[in-house]
Image (tube, each protein chain N blue to C red):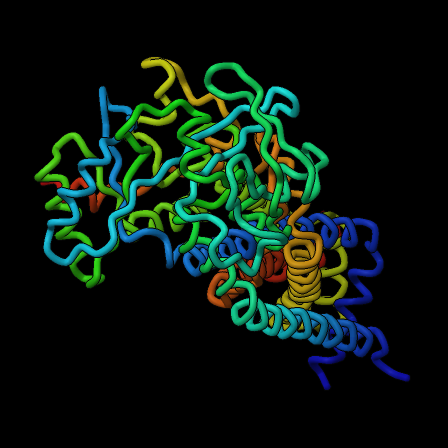
Length: 104
Length: 385
């Protein structure tokens, strides 16, 4: 059989594309299923318990509730202390631009 | 057919230097897998936060004292209720508890009229009697508790208080409830020793969504010491938190991108003597400059497309099947209670195309460019150099 290497490469590429398309389709179907089942249940939790934040980083107040944190967090525990919780490096600063605009 | 022949020759040529090329494919694949995992994970988290926090309170009113969040008088709720367009106004009682036993921080939330209709994501029920509680699965596993067990916490007077566990949130809800301990409002006020007539903050319902900024501005004008936080701000906070442009994710992203630049730069700044000799021989036996460039183009395509597809497959598997477990140790920080990233898959095809064009195109270009320099030179000179 001639050009066997090119054909093998093309076959492997097609298999990779099929696997990727399969994963993409699977992720879409999981997303659809969770959107119809789990998301409404989570929304119910948020509504009933009046939750404002995700329970991801529990190490400090301003990482547990980034949307409710003081304006000057993470410096709240000492005027000149630098960020000392690792999660603070992951959590970007909240966008306050519209609040500032509303205040003006 | 001619293209297929050149592709076949390109693969033969790559296979002759297989250890070098397989190493490049391995590094390139890992780099793309890291970049794609970051993009897919942050996009999925952002979409999930947007969907589930859609029902967060319209406005949360905090009182600031000395620039810090302070307890708010419940009487303020009455005044806020008078603002036109405002519906239900509820004082919220909640706080944090450091558990010395496990080293974890819990979030204690008070609930008015507990025991009423239970929640789909709660096994058991909400606290209805005095000294009962519902807990998140993170708290349950840290303290090894089940429904019917007792949770002992130390209150503000340094006295141990026992709560009967009447409900545990299912682990599918961990991203919201992992560290929660739900008590009745009265139990929580008693536990934290909150003074009479003071709450942690006030949640405000606004009938017309378009009036939320106006109501927030009115609250701020009427009570200058308060800080109203609208739901839109909460959603935008999470949009910023999970932006790939923020924090350590950005550092990881650029670390991987920099590694790719070094790889591409190494390719672009020169080719080996063996590769030069090969180009010289091809030219000497009749290959044109265009043929040599096409050969190098296919070499670049074989490596970069294989790496891209493998990297994307690895990223999908990592984020959606293994819950991004490799990132957990980086993102976790010092949190004792940390939920699994069991995110709902959301893929932004635009991001994937940008990633593909940022990796495949520069790599192919950096493969062709040095070969072009060798291909336009005299074959004899190239073979002798």
